Image (cartoon, rainbow over all chains, first blue to last red; front, top):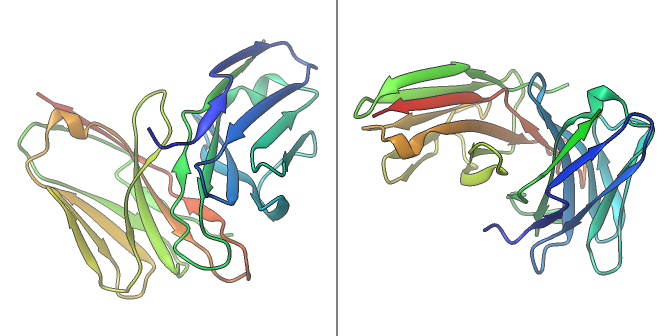
Length: 115
Length: 114
């Protein structure tokens, strides 16, 4: 158990819909990262938040957005869903801010299926 | 764009054999990590290497960071069925201050046959 929790475990929805994925980082970790993992594209970095502020952006679509709340949990919002958005979405957390080795601890993931 | 290429992409060997997985890039990384991921679960951190030429051992697993910090290898001795999984390398990019993005490799799917 990494200490990172994600809900829900599974999510099935239809095209055009909007969903919210939730992540609670390990106790004490200030950074939260979101990744998308699909069969054909491996693990893709989406976005990072540090202590409530956006820190880095990866290949995140404009239809996707995220935020980190004062209690440090984070939500990833996916809207206007398309079939191609079906994937595993992982959240990871780390202690590091601007120093350290950025060792990330991953949650169990949310499997999103868009029908 | 930084890329990390892993080879082989797939590897299936008999229990007790040795194997090496490679992680290569044209970019320099400040540190490199190896993760193992099992089906339906998140990646689990195995090791972090920081210094060029560094070698770290974790039981039957030996990790090496290239002298130029552009590549790494993972060697498993006497593989066991419990080693089965997806192995991912990930490099940290320090070129942008405060940017702690990890670039993940393409992955090596390892199957150990009992």
